[in-house]
Image (spheres, helix red, strand yellow):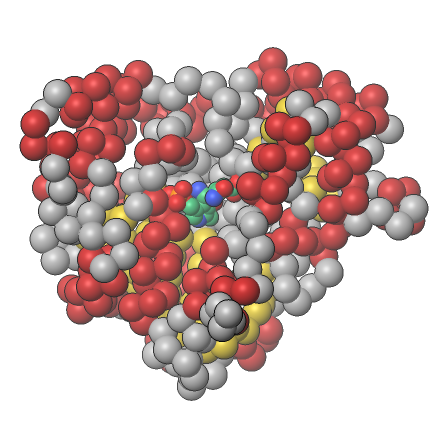
Length: 388
Ligand code: PMP
Ligand code: GLN
Protein backbone atom coordinates (compact mmCIF):
# COMPACT_ATOMS: atom_id res chain seq x y z
CA UNK A 1 0.00 0.00 0.00
CA UNK A 2 1.16 3.55 -0.65
CA UNK A 3 2.26 5.59 2.37
CA UNK A 4 -0.20 7.87 4.13
CA UNK A 5 0.58 11.59 4.35
CA UNK A 6 4.01 11.84 5.98
CA UNK A 7 2.96 14.92 7.97
CA UNK A 8 0.14 12.90 9.51
CA UNK A 9 2.22 9.78 10.12
CA UNK A 10 4.23 11.47 12.87
CA UNK A 11 1.21 12.76 14.82
CA UNK A 12 0.59 10.93 18.10
CA UNK A 13 -2.46 10.57 20.32
CA UNK A 14 -2.77 13.81 22.32
CA UNK A 15 -1.23 13.94 25.77
CA UNK A 16 -4.72 14.76 27.16
CA UNK A 17 -6.25 11.56 25.77
CA UNK A 18 -3.21 9.53 26.82
CA UNK A 19 -3.32 10.75 30.42
CA UNK A 20 -7.09 10.47 30.71
CA UNK A 21 -7.00 6.85 29.58
CA UNK A 22 -4.15 6.08 32.02
CA UNK A 23 -6.15 7.79 34.79
CA UNK A 24 -9.22 5.69 33.95
CA UNK A 25 -7.20 2.51 33.70
CA UNK A 26 -5.71 3.03 37.18
CA UNK A 27 -8.80 4.66 38.70
CA UNK A 28 -6.75 7.76 39.42
CA UNK A 29 -8.11 11.24 40.13
CA UNK A 30 -7.91 13.05 36.81
CA UNK A 31 -6.17 16.41 37.31
CA UNK A 32 -4.77 15.94 33.80
CA UNK A 33 -7.21 16.83 30.99
CA UNK A 34 -8.86 20.22 31.47
CA UNK A 35 -12.54 19.68 32.17
CA UNK A 36 -14.71 20.17 35.26
CA UNK A 37 -15.94 17.12 37.19
CA UNK A 38 -18.82 19.10 38.75
CA UNK A 39 -22.13 20.16 37.27
CA UNK A 40 -22.04 23.15 34.96
CA UNK A 41 -24.66 25.91 35.01
CA UNK A 42 -28.29 24.78 34.76
CA UNK A 43 -29.12 27.50 32.26
CA UNK A 44 -26.97 25.69 29.69
CA UNK A 45 -28.71 22.35 30.16
CA UNK A 46 -32.14 24.02 30.23
CA UNK A 47 -31.34 25.88 27.01
CA UNK A 48 -30.22 22.60 25.39
CA UNK A 49 -33.55 21.02 26.34
CA UNK A 50 -35.39 24.01 24.93
CA UNK A 51 -33.35 23.83 21.71
CA UNK A 52 -34.25 20.15 21.24
CA UNK A 53 -37.90 21.15 21.08
CA UNK A 54 -37.28 23.76 18.35
CA UNK A 55 -37.87 22.16 14.97
CA UNK A 56 -35.48 24.41 13.06
CA UNK A 57 -32.57 23.38 15.29
CA UNK A 58 -32.81 19.78 14.10
CA UNK A 59 -31.55 20.82 10.67
CA UNK A 60 -28.28 22.25 9.36
CA UNK A 61 -27.34 25.57 10.90
CA UNK A 62 -26.28 28.34 8.51
CA UNK A 63 -22.60 27.80 7.62
CA UNK A 64 -21.27 30.83 9.61
CA UNK A 65 -23.45 30.17 12.69
CA UNK A 66 -26.99 30.85 13.97
CA UNK A 67 -27.86 34.52 14.18
CA UNK A 68 -28.82 34.65 17.91
CA UNK A 69 -25.30 33.45 18.79
CA UNK A 70 -23.55 35.72 16.29
CA UNK A 71 -25.52 38.66 17.68
CA UNK A 72 -24.67 37.78 21.31
CA UNK A 73 -20.98 37.52 20.45
CA UNK A 74 -21.06 40.88 18.72
CA UNK A 75 -22.62 42.35 21.88
CA UNK A 76 -20.11 40.59 24.11
CA UNK A 77 -17.06 41.95 22.26
CA UNK A 78 -18.55 45.45 22.13
CA UNK A 79 -19.65 45.60 25.76
CA UNK A 80 -16.75 43.75 27.36
CA UNK A 81 -13.86 45.10 25.33
CA UNK A 82 -15.13 47.94 23.07
CA UNK A 83 -14.19 45.69 20.19
CA UNK A 84 -16.48 45.96 17.18
CA UNK A 85 -17.08 42.84 15.11
CA UNK A 86 -19.82 42.76 12.51
CA UNK A 87 -21.87 39.62 13.14
CA UNK A 88 -22.54 39.06 9.44
CA UNK A 89 -19.06 39.39 8.01
CA UNK A 90 -16.61 39.06 10.91
CA UNK A 91 -17.69 36.23 13.24
CA UNK A 92 -17.84 32.50 12.45
CA UNK A 93 -19.00 29.73 14.78
CA UNK A 94 -16.66 26.74 14.77
CA UNK A 95 -16.59 23.26 16.25
CA UNK A 96 -14.70 24.39 19.35
CA UNK A 97 -11.60 26.54 19.36
CA UNK A 98 -9.73 23.54 17.98
CA UNK A 99 -11.51 23.81 14.65
CA UNK A 100 -10.99 27.59 14.58
CA UNK A 101 -7.23 27.06 15.05
CA UNK A 102 -7.04 24.51 12.22
CA UNK A 103 -9.25 26.57 9.91
CA UNK A 104 -7.17 29.72 10.49
CA UNK A 105 -3.97 27.83 9.80
CA UNK A 106 -5.25 26.25 6.57
CA UNK A 107 -6.78 29.53 5.41
CA UNK A 108 -3.64 31.61 5.90
CA UNK A 109 -0.58 29.40 5.56
CA UNK A 110 1.24 27.65 2.75
CA UNK A 111 4.63 26.01 2.31
CA UNK A 112 7.41 28.57 2.68
CA UNK A 113 5.56 30.59 5.29
CA UNK A 114 6.92 30.79 8.82
CA UNK A 115 4.93 30.84 12.03
CA UNK A 116 5.96 31.72 15.57
CA UNK A 117 4.89 29.63 18.55
CA UNK A 118 5.46 30.48 22.18
CA UNK A 119 6.36 27.39 24.19
CA UNK A 120 4.83 25.89 26.27
CA UNK A 121 2.25 25.84 23.45
CA UNK A 122 -1.22 24.35 23.13
CA UNK A 123 -0.67 21.05 21.33
CA UNK A 124 -2.86 21.79 18.32
CA UNK A 125 -0.79 24.81 17.19
CA UNK A 126 2.29 23.01 15.84
CA UNK A 127 0.15 20.31 14.23
CA UNK A 128 -2.13 22.84 12.52
CA UNK A 129 0.87 24.83 11.26
CA UNK A 130 2.60 21.69 10.06
CA UNK A 131 -0.44 20.36 8.21
CA UNK A 132 -0.66 23.71 6.46
CA UNK A 133 2.97 23.26 5.39
CA UNK A 134 4.48 26.15 7.38
CA UNK A 135 7.90 26.23 9.09
CA UNK A 136 7.85 26.72 12.85
CA UNK A 137 10.00 29.10 14.95
CA UNK A 138 9.73 28.71 18.71
CA UNK A 139 10.12 31.33 21.45
CA UNK A 140 10.36 29.99 25.01
CA UNK A 141 8.42 31.57 27.87
CA UNK A 142 10.78 30.93 30.77
CA UNK A 143 9.91 30.20 34.36
CA UNK A 144 9.21 31.51 36.92
CA UNK A 145 7.35 34.48 35.36
CA UNK A 146 6.93 33.05 31.85
CA UNK A 147 7.67 36.35 30.10
CA UNK A 148 9.27 36.26 26.71
CA UNK A 149 12.75 37.60 26.12
CA UNK A 150 12.36 40.58 23.78
CA UNK A 151 15.53 39.83 21.82
CA UNK A 152 14.56 36.20 21.36
CA UNK A 153 11.11 37.24 20.16
CA UNK A 154 12.48 39.76 17.65
CA UNK A 155 14.98 37.22 16.38
CA UNK A 156 12.16 34.76 15.67
CA UNK A 157 10.51 37.17 13.21
CA UNK A 158 11.59 37.30 9.57
CA UNK A 159 10.06 38.63 6.35
CA UNK A 160 8.56 35.14 5.92
CA UNK A 161 6.67 35.25 9.25
CA UNK A 162 2.98 34.96 8.40
CA UNK A 163 1.29 33.99 11.66
CA UNK A 164 1.98 34.17 15.40
CA UNK A 165 0.07 31.72 17.60
CA UNK A 166 -0.64 33.46 20.89
CA UNK A 167 -2.59 32.06 23.83
CA UNK A 168 -3.77 34.55 26.44
CA UNK A 169 -4.71 33.75 29.25
CA UNK A 170 -2.06 31.11 28.79
CA UNK A 171 -2.40 27.37 29.17
CA UNK A 172 -0.38 25.89 30.89
CA UNK A 173 1.62 28.76 32.47
CA UNK A 174 -1.39 30.67 33.83
CA UNK A 175 0.03 33.97 32.54
CA UNK A 176 -2.32 36.83 31.72
CA UNK A 177 -0.27 39.09 29.47
CA UNK A 178 -0.09 42.83 30.16
CA UNK A 179 -1.02 45.62 27.79
CA UNK A 180 2.69 46.47 27.42
CA UNK A 181 3.47 42.91 26.37
CA UNK A 182 0.57 42.87 23.92
CA UNK A 183 1.78 46.16 22.42
CA UNK A 184 5.29 44.77 22.00
CA UNK A 185 3.95 41.71 20.15
CA UNK A 186 1.65 43.83 18.03
CA UNK A 187 4.46 46.23 17.05
CA UNK A 188 6.54 43.29 15.80
CA UNK A 189 3.58 41.78 13.94
CA UNK A 190 3.04 45.13 12.25
CA UNK A 191 6.71 45.62 11.43
CA UNK A 192 6.93 42.16 9.82
CA UNK A 193 3.37 42.20 8.43
CA UNK A 194 2.32 39.05 10.32
CA UNK A 195 -1.12 37.91 11.43
CA UNK A 196 -1.82 37.09 15.09
CA UNK A 197 -3.94 34.12 16.06
CA UNK A 198 -5.10 35.01 19.55
CA UNK A 199 -6.52 32.01 21.38
CA UNK A 200 -8.57 33.42 24.26
CA UNK A 201 -10.53 30.37 25.43
CA UNK A 202 -9.78 31.29 29.08
CA UNK A 203 -10.83 34.93 28.60
CA UNK A 204 -13.14 34.86 31.65
CA UNK A 205 -10.90 32.80 33.93
CA UNK A 206 -8.64 35.50 35.37
CA UNK A 207 -7.92 36.06 39.06
CA UNK A 208 -6.86 38.69 41.61
CA UNK A 209 -6.42 41.97 39.76
CA UNK A 210 -5.60 40.35 36.42
CA UNK A 211 -7.97 41.08 33.56
CA UNK A 212 -7.99 39.82 30.02
CA UNK A 213 -7.29 42.26 27.20
CA UNK A 214 -7.95 40.89 23.70
CA UNK A 215 -4.98 41.91 21.56
CA UNK A 216 -7.43 42.83 18.77
CA UNK A 217 -8.77 45.65 20.98
CA UNK A 218 -5.43 47.53 20.76
CA UNK A 219 -5.14 50.24 18.16
CA UNK A 220 -4.09 48.89 14.77
CA UNK A 221 -4.47 45.24 15.82
CA UNK A 222 -7.89 44.16 14.60
CA UNK A 223 -7.08 43.99 10.89
CA UNK A 224 -4.29 41.44 11.48
CA UNK A 225 -5.76 39.47 14.39
CA UNK A 226 -7.87 36.31 14.43
CA UNK A 227 -9.59 36.30 17.83
CA UNK A 228 -10.55 32.78 18.83
CA UNK A 229 -12.53 31.68 21.86
CA UNK A 230 -14.83 28.92 22.99
CA UNK A 231 -17.76 28.19 25.28
CA UNK A 232 -16.45 24.95 26.79
CA UNK A 233 -14.47 26.39 29.72
CA UNK A 234 -16.69 29.37 30.37
CA UNK A 235 -19.94 27.45 30.61
CA UNK A 236 -18.61 24.34 32.35
CA UNK A 237 -19.49 21.93 29.52
CA UNK A 238 -16.43 21.15 27.42
CA UNK A 239 -18.54 18.73 25.39
CA UNK A 240 -20.47 21.63 23.83
CA UNK A 241 -17.66 22.14 21.31
CA UNK A 242 -18.89 25.56 20.29
CA UNK A 243 -16.07 27.95 19.47
CA UNK A 244 -15.72 31.04 17.32
CA UNK A 245 -13.35 33.03 15.22
CA UNK A 246 -13.61 36.80 14.83
CA UNK A 247 -11.53 38.63 12.22
CA UNK A 248 -11.69 41.17 9.40
CA UNK A 249 -14.13 40.38 6.53
CA UNK A 250 -11.23 39.30 4.27
CA UNK A 251 -9.76 36.86 6.78
CA UNK A 252 -13.23 35.71 7.82
CA UNK A 253 -14.15 34.91 4.23
CA UNK A 254 -11.05 32.76 3.76
CA UNK A 255 -11.63 30.96 7.06
CA UNK A 256 -15.28 30.37 6.23
CA UNK A 257 -14.33 28.73 2.95
CA UNK A 258 -12.21 26.20 4.85
CA UNK A 259 -14.84 25.78 7.59
CA UNK A 260 -17.47 25.21 4.89
CA UNK A 261 -15.63 22.17 3.55
CA UNK A 262 -14.44 20.96 6.90
CA UNK A 263 -17.63 20.72 8.97
CA UNK A 264 -19.94 23.07 7.00
CA UNK A 265 -21.76 24.14 10.18
CA UNK A 266 -21.95 23.49 13.92
CA UNK A 267 -24.75 21.79 15.90
CA UNK A 268 -27.44 24.51 16.22
CA UNK A 269 -28.75 23.21 19.56
CA UNK A 270 -25.35 23.68 21.16
CA UNK A 271 -25.04 27.10 19.50
CA UNK A 272 -28.40 28.14 20.93
CA UNK A 273 -27.35 27.08 24.46
CA UNK A 274 -24.23 29.23 24.18
CA UNK A 275 -26.28 32.21 22.98
CA UNK A 276 -28.45 31.83 26.11
CA UNK A 277 -25.28 31.43 28.20
CA UNK A 278 -23.82 34.71 26.94
CA UNK A 279 -26.98 36.50 28.07
CA UNK A 280 -26.22 35.41 31.64
CA UNK A 281 -22.67 36.76 31.68
CA UNK A 282 -23.25 39.83 33.82
CA UNK A 283 -24.40 37.71 36.75
CA UNK A 284 -22.61 34.47 35.91
CA UNK A 285 -19.02 35.52 35.17
CA UNK A 286 -18.26 37.08 38.61
CA UNK A 287 -19.51 33.84 40.24
CA UNK A 288 -17.42 31.76 37.85
CA UNK A 289 -14.24 33.74 38.61
CA UNK A 290 -14.75 33.59 42.34
CA UNK A 291 -15.49 29.84 42.29
CA UNK A 292 -12.33 29.14 40.33
CA UNK A 293 -10.19 31.57 42.31
CA UNK A 294 -11.08 29.61 45.48
CA UNK A 295 -10.23 26.34 43.76
CA UNK A 296 -6.93 27.77 42.56
CA UNK A 297 -6.08 28.80 46.13
CA UNK A 298 -7.14 25.44 47.52
CA UNK A 299 -4.89 23.47 45.17
CA UNK A 300 -2.06 26.02 45.28
CA UNK A 301 -1.93 25.94 49.10
CA UNK A 302 -2.21 22.17 49.15
CA UNK A 303 0.66 21.82 46.65
CA UNK A 304 2.77 24.14 48.80
CA UNK A 305 2.50 21.56 51.57
CA UNK A 306 4.13 18.96 49.32
CA UNK A 307 7.71 19.03 47.98
CA UNK A 308 6.33 20.51 44.71
CA UNK A 309 6.84 24.25 44.10
CA UNK A 310 3.62 25.54 42.53
CA UNK A 311 3.57 28.74 40.47
CA UNK A 312 0.45 30.77 41.17
CA UNK A 313 -1.54 31.19 37.93
CA UNK A 314 -3.04 34.57 37.06
CA UNK A 315 -5.64 32.88 34.87
CA UNK A 316 -6.90 29.55 33.35
CA UNK A 317 -7.69 26.50 35.48
CA UNK A 318 -4.21 25.00 35.55
CA UNK A 319 -1.26 25.20 37.93
CA UNK A 320 2.30 24.40 36.88
CA UNK A 321 4.30 23.01 39.78
CA UNK A 322 8.03 22.42 39.82
CA UNK A 323 9.13 18.85 40.46
CA UNK A 324 11.26 18.55 43.64
CA UNK A 325 15.04 18.60 43.04
CA UNK A 326 15.37 15.22 44.73
CA UNK A 327 13.18 13.57 42.09
CA UNK A 328 15.07 15.27 39.24
CA UNK A 329 18.39 14.03 40.68
CA UNK A 330 16.93 10.52 40.83
CA UNK A 331 16.68 10.89 37.05
CA UNK A 332 12.90 11.28 36.92
CA UNK A 333 11.55 13.59 34.25
CA UNK A 334 7.96 14.89 34.06
CA UNK A 335 6.58 11.88 32.16
CA UNK A 336 8.22 9.33 34.46
CA UNK A 337 7.01 11.09 37.60
CA UNK A 338 3.57 11.56 36.09
CA UNK A 339 3.29 7.79 35.51
CA UNK A 340 4.49 7.03 39.06
CA UNK A 341 1.90 9.42 40.50
CA UNK A 342 -0.87 7.76 38.51
CA UNK A 343 0.00 4.24 39.58
CA UNK A 344 1.24 4.90 43.13
CA UNK A 345 -0.75 7.97 44.26
CA UNK A 346 -3.81 7.67 42.04
CA UNK A 347 -3.41 11.25 40.81
CA UNK A 348 -3.12 12.00 37.10
CA UNK A 349 -1.44 15.19 35.82
CA UNK A 350 -0.01 16.37 32.50
CA UNK A 351 3.71 16.17 31.73
CA UNK A 352 4.31 19.58 30.11
CA UNK A 353 7.26 18.51 27.96
CA UNK A 354 4.48 17.68 25.45
CA UNK A 355 4.10 21.47 25.08
CA UNK A 356 7.77 22.16 24.31
CA UNK A 357 9.87 21.49 21.22
CA UNK A 358 12.97 23.60 21.87
CA UNK A 359 13.71 23.95 25.57
CA UNK A 360 13.95 21.08 28.08
CA UNK A 361 12.21 23.18 30.76
CA UNK A 362 8.94 21.26 30.48
CA UNK A 363 10.56 18.19 32.04
CA UNK A 364 10.91 20.11 35.33
CA UNK A 365 7.16 20.61 35.84
CA UNK A 366 3.80 18.90 36.13
CA UNK A 367 0.49 20.55 35.19
CA UNK A 368 -2.43 20.20 37.60
CA UNK A 369 -6.04 21.06 36.64
CA UNK A 370 -8.11 22.57 39.45
CA UNK A 371 -11.51 22.44 37.69
CA UNK A 372 -12.63 19.79 40.16
CA UNK A 373 -14.94 19.77 43.15
CA UNK A 374 -13.26 20.62 46.46
CA UNK A 375 -13.48 17.06 47.82
CA UNK A 376 -11.60 15.76 44.76
CA UNK A 377 -8.92 18.44 45.08
CA UNK A 378 -8.52 17.65 48.79
CA UNK A 379 -8.26 13.92 48.16
CA UNK A 380 -5.70 14.49 45.41
CA UNK A 381 -3.66 16.72 47.75
CA UNK A 382 -3.74 14.05 50.47
CA UNK A 383 -2.54 11.40 48.01
CA UNK A 384 0.25 13.66 46.75
CA UNK A 385 1.47 14.35 50.29
CA UNK A 386 1.66 10.67 51.11
CA UNK A 387 3.62 9.97 47.91
CA UNK A 388 6.75 11.67 49.25
N1 PMP B 1 -6.93 26.39 23.15
C1 PMP B 1 -6.53 26.16 24.41
C2 PMP B 1 -5.42 26.99 24.97
C3 PMP B 1 -7.12 25.16 25.17
O1 PMP B 1 -6.71 24.93 26.41
C4 PMP B 1 -8.15 24.39 24.59
C5 PMP B 1 -8.80 23.30 25.37
N2 PMP B 1 -10.06 23.69 25.67
C6 PMP B 1 -8.54 24.67 23.28
C7 PMP B 1 -7.90 25.67 22.59
C8 PMP B 1 -9.61 23.87 22.60
O2 PMP B 1 -10.86 24.36 22.87
P1 PMP B 1 -12.18 23.59 22.37
O3 PMP B 1 -12.45 22.52 23.35
O4 PMP B 1 -13.22 24.65 22.34
O5 PMP B 1 -11.89 23.04 21.02
N1 GLN C 1 -7.71 22.07 26.64
C1 GLN C 1 -7.69 20.88 27.45
C2 GLN C 1 -6.44 20.90 28.32
O1 GLN C 1 -5.57 21.70 28.17
C3 GLN C 1 -7.70 19.61 26.65
C4 GLN C 1 -8.57 19.56 25.47
C5 GLN C 1 -8.48 18.24 24.76
O2 GLN C 1 -8.33 17.19 25.37
N2 GLN C 1 -8.54 18.30 23.48
O3 GLN C 1 -6.38 20.07 29.18
